[in-house]
Length: 276
Length: 278
Image 1 (tube, rainbow over the protein chains, first blue to last red):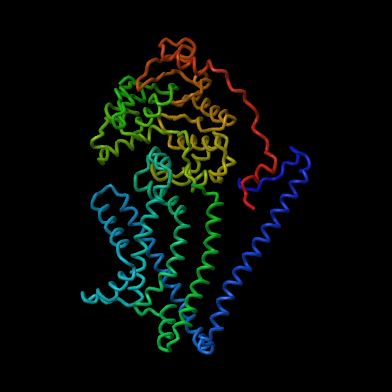
Image 2: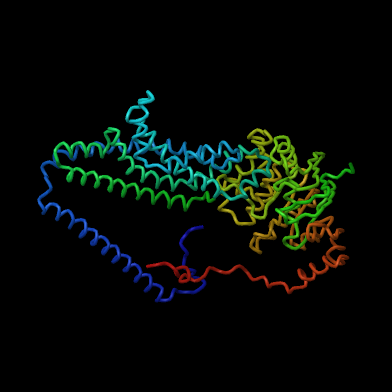
C-alpha cells in the first residue's frame, strides 16, 4: 500500500538518464544539508561551552564532584513523569466522556474541572495540594502530592485532546454499530474508544515529553528529583550556575531521546494497518 | 396484517424546517426486492435511515417483522423507545455507502462482534456463521485481513456479510456502489443479485439501473420526499407514467455513457517525485 513506487520498467522502457541524474543530485543535496546542519550546531553549542569555560566562571572540580549526584535525580524525574502521565490518561478519559455527556450535571462537572485547572498555574496547584491541604488535616507525602498535582493538571489539558480524539472517529462507525443493534455503551467501549485511543497516542507521547520538563516543578514540594538535587547542591555551595546548567543539559538530552522515540511512534502509527 | 415484513406508514421527516420526507407509505412482502430510485436529495437515503431509526422520524410509524414503532421525536432518548428501536435494527440490517467496517478489527472480528455481543451467540457459532457468509461473498481468503488492506469492492462485500450474520428479516442498502471505483461495482452487484434471487428481502437505494432491471421485483421512484411512481422494473424504467420519473430517466439514461477505459497503468516514476522537497 505504502511501498515506494517502483519504476514501471515495462511501461517506459529504460528510465531516462535524467531520472538517475536527478536522484543523485537530490542525494548529494541531502548529505550536504545534514553536514551543514551538524556543523552549525557544533559551532553554536561548542562556542557557548568554550565561552563559559573561558570566562572562568565554571568550577570543574565542583562539577566532577556533584554531577553524579544530580544525575541521580533522573530516575525520580522519569518515575514521577511516567506515573503522572498514566494517571492523567485516566483523568482525561473520564473528563472527555464527561465533556461529551448529554447529562447536564456531568457535563458541568467535567467543564468546571477543565476550566479551573486550565485557569490556574500549575505551580499554584502543586503548592496548594502540598502546602494548603494540610490546613484541612490532609497531609500528602511529597511523591503522592506531586504526582496528583501533575496528573490532575495534565488530565485537564488532555481531556480536550481525548474529546477531540473521540469526535475524530467517523460518524459512520457509530452508525454502523447502531445499525448492528449494539447498545450505546458497547459502541463506546468496543468501537469508538479503541479508535480514539489510537488517534490520541501520538498526542500522549507529546504530553509525556512536556511532562518530563514540568515535573521539575515538583522540586518545590521537596521531591528529590533532578531539579531539586541541582538546586539544593547549587544554593548550598553558591554554584547555581554550574548546577542549573547541568540540570538544563540533562533535561534537554532527555527530551531529544524521547522525541526520537516519539517520532518513531508517530511513524509507526501512520503506517499501521489499522487505519481509522 | 397483510403478511408484509416491512411496513412504513405515513412517514415524515424534518431536518430543522427542511421537510425531507413528506408522507411515505411502503409495504415490503417477504422475499421481495425493492429498488428505490430518485435524484439525490429526494429523500431515499433518509427513508432507509428512518426505517432503522438512525434518524428519528418526525411523524409516522415503522413496522418490521411485527415490531411496530411509532415516531416519537420528543422522547427519542427514552429507554423504552430505544429498546424498541434496537429490536427493529436487529431485524432490518443496513449496508452503507461508505462500508463502515471497523478498521481496528480484522475481517472475521468485524463479522462476529455483533452476533456475539448483541445476539449472545457463542464464539464458535459466530465464527462458523461468519465463515459461511464470507464464503458466500467469496472472501474466505480475506478472513484474517485488516479492512484497510481490502479494495472498496471487497470492503462492501465484507459489509454485506457482516449484515447477513445478524440474520435479518430485511437487508437495506444505501447506495452500496456509489463510493466504488467503477471497475469494482460489478462484484458487489453480483453478490446483491445472488441474494435477491435467493429470496432475501431487500430494500435498495441505488442509481444502478441494470441492477434494478435485473433483480428488483418492484421499483419505486421518489421525488421531494414522496413516492411518485411504483411498479415492476420494466414498467417504471421503460414506460414511466409520471412526468417526473420520465425527466429523471431521460437525464440518467439519455446522456451518452462515459467510455469505460481500463484502469490507468502505473504512472512513470518521475511523476511520484513531484512535490518532494530535496
